[in-house]
Image 1 (cartoon, rainbow, N blue to C red):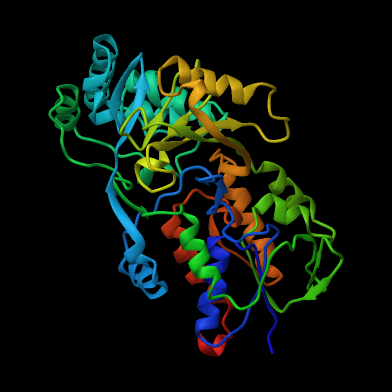
Image 2 (cartoon, one colour; image 1 turned 90 degrees about the vertical axis):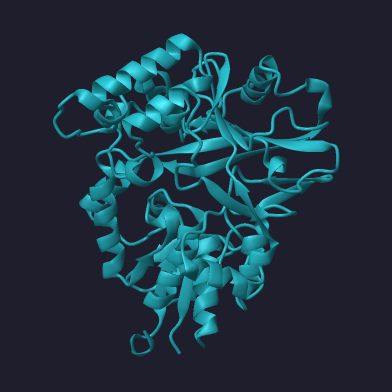
Length: 432
């Protein structure tokens, strides 16, 4: 019998094993945490449920819906129209900013509108980086007030360092009429891949991962992989156990996967590993007495005086707190390899209090977590480094699957589809 391993029990790894099992093949899933789901998890603190930052499901394909219906999950997901906003210049305006400048102070609105018109009329060469692309697509005003500071805060990198591999799907480009209408408050159509989303009616996002995990017969939790021998085809756990494999799918973050390989690594592989950049995220989840201060699902904060880049009120789209209470999610980007700055949690909460979105005496529960990694940095070296490492692992029969192993940005639906694709790859050749 072919021995098949799946490294990582996040959503992609779980779906991989579940799909294999559904077609009569077995795989062992190894997950270092005590609960399945990876970042798609929910922790309970008292009567509150806290997700590991924002996780919303955007379903665009019938294949995904059919899968969720088969799991019995679809009917437990409530659909929402996105209520997201931007806090800028002491004002609040709906997201995305490029078609909703009407809520901003007049001088910022003028900068954004004039900049877009100038960019629309200009003839520029093809952009080579995110900085040039923003100027070409949106103009100087929108770039200076939102796109540059927000993305530099999130990715901890200058806009010129960022490539264009990620912008098409996630940054919608309006036409001139939409921007003018947006400056006058006349734009009323939803825009963007996340304009509508689904979320569990209660209990948090772990509903999805738990439903898949329940179908996986050999899921080994609390099992961290510390060594991978590619030539001899075995892995070793933190407990010292060795497991042989014939075929393997890895969903572990790509740099950490390389770090666990005990075979001598060629210089070019080590160079590709060093080229990978990412940021961590400090997530401060709060359980708060009283109703949420705003109806929005989440806010973007581009300005440097706020340490966080995003703040959400998850209980506005799911039952995560007792009646008359709410939850808050505060997200701060961090450079990896450095300790969390002292008093950062207190500073983040204080900044939210200054704008009236939090009252200190109402906080009842607090969960502080660090996601590592949280976001891939799409710099100019990422694409070639990932391609090089993918070829290296493929030569040894290791398939990379999912957001972290493929070192990309993707949504929860992509995680499901990536798992399905990985299962097809892992099946014996005669069954594909």
